Every structure is written in C-alpha cells, then in structure tokens.
Amino acid sequence: MTEPLLRVQGVSMDFPLRGGGVLHAVRDVSFSLANGETLGIVGESGSGKSTLARMLLHLAPPTAGAVIMAGIALAGLSAAALRRQRRHMQMVFQDPMAALDSRMCVGDIIAEPLHIHGIGTKQSRAARVAELCAMVGLPAAALQRFPHEFSGGQRQRISIARALAPSPTLLVLDEPVSALDVSIQAQILNLLVQIRQDLALSYVFISHDLAVIRHVSDRIAVMYLGQIVETGPAEAVLRRPRHPYAELLLSAVLEPGSRHTAAAPKGEPANPADPPSGCAFHPRCPRASARCAAEYPPPATLDAQEFRCWHPAV
Image (cartoon, rainbow, N blue to C red; front, side, top):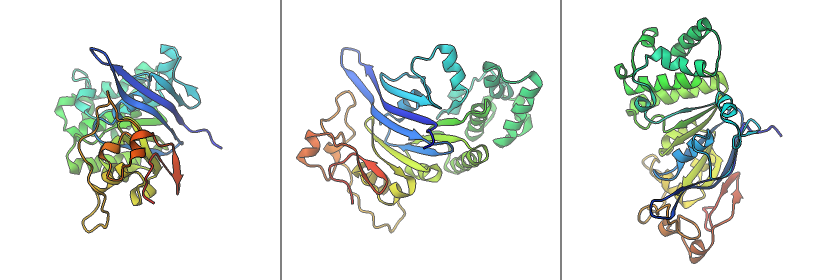
C-alpha cells in the first residue's frame, strides 16, 4: 500500500486558561491524506478547525500525538530541519490582507519563499514569480503594486501564488474564501481546483460551509468540539451522513424540495474548557440516549464512512 503523504495520529491541543483549567481545542484527531487528494474539514466556528490547520504545519505544536509528512515526523525536528520540511507544505490563510505584508510589493511577497528556502538564482526567481502571477490570474503589472491596491479576491490570489512559490506538495487552506463575496468565492474555488489538477497537489481544505467543501473535496471530515465525528468519501457523506451533527450541517445547504428532515439541534455548542461527558454532541442531539451521555462512542464503519455515534443514520 502506498504511504500517505500526510498522517495525523491522535493529535490534541490544550491551552491553559488564566486562573486554572484547560481549554481542549483539539482532541485525539487522526486522519491520513493521499497524494493528489483533497480532504475537506468542516464544522461550526469554534470546532477546532483553524487550530488543527496550524498544527499540521507545526505552527502550533500539538500537546499530544504526531503529524507525519512524507514519512517524517515533525515533532523533534530542529528549527532548520522544520523550515526545510515546510518548503513542501504551505498554508493559505482566511484573511489575505492580514497575511500579506503591506510594506512589500506583490513581486517581493511572492518571491519571499524562494529567498527563504534558497531556491534559484535572481533571474530564475523573477521568471518563477511571473509564471505564478499568470497562473493565478493576476496581470504582470501587479508585481510592482502593494496589497492595499487590490480587491479581496485579488489579494487571495497573491496569497495562493506565494504559497505555490516553493513548489509544495501540500496546501493547507484555512477558510480561504469565507471573507469573499459569493461570486468571487466561486472564482477562487475554481482556480484552486484547476491548480490542484495541473500541479497534482494535495489539499487540506478547511471551511464552516459544507457547500464550499462539496465543491472541492474527495473526502470529508466533520469536526465538532475538537473531535472528528465522521469521515468518508465526499459523495457518501453528502448523500447519507451517519452522524446527527453531519446531518445538521447538510440540512443547512440542501436544495429546496429536498426530503431531508434532520431535526434542528438544541442550544449552543458546549464550552471546550468543560466538554460534556460521553459524546460531546449529546446535549444538542435529537437522538441522544442515556448511553450517549455516559460513554464516548468508539469508531464504527458503514459503507466506507467512519463515525462515532451510538445512534447513526442507517
């Protein structure tokens, strides 16, 4: 069997709270990503998606578990070795204006990873920057301008070009279109799909919007309160989600006339500093039983979908 490009093994992230206590942002998350595959990670705000994204690049080292990229465990690498590994794994952030240095022109922003990793000569770097500018749909004149002179969609194209500069094999995209107008979202999503096909990249694509995840993903992982509650092929999860929380997310995006009748959840997500016992979703779940509050469900599999639920849809 081919080794996955990325393996995430039981990672957790805890943040100590002022005055005592711990916030459990991510809890025992595991998944793998194949070469050329897109894994969409979806969940409500506060589910731990962005924290997980930062853990994948070791921007926030996990408090437990391991992230293994191309067979190399990131934990324990020296700063120099970690920097070399990050050439192969890049990130696109939610807010491109905050992610771009307003004092640098676009050409220098895109070229910066090439300088950091010592890639190419001055001439080859200039050619690479021009190539990337064309690839993401920016005019050549953009290279001499500054981020504030562009629209939000154009700034995200600059961020994508910068991420592609060192020729990574993995892009982690953290809500890359959520700050954009709907029409611009579609353009950026189509660009990302085309780039993945042309360059044979792998994506971890994070969003709170299942409609966006549906457009780009081969597989989907559903997160709730720091845990992955369901994973599976995108078509299968979208057609028949097994976990009630995944049903809830799907019910919010289905077309008019759908027969889907998932019940609305009760209340608000729990406090990650004081998560519920058993299944974290049970206080809001329309199918919850006493067992759900007492025991955390083990992984179960049905039709290639893995989930953690005592009362899944069948």
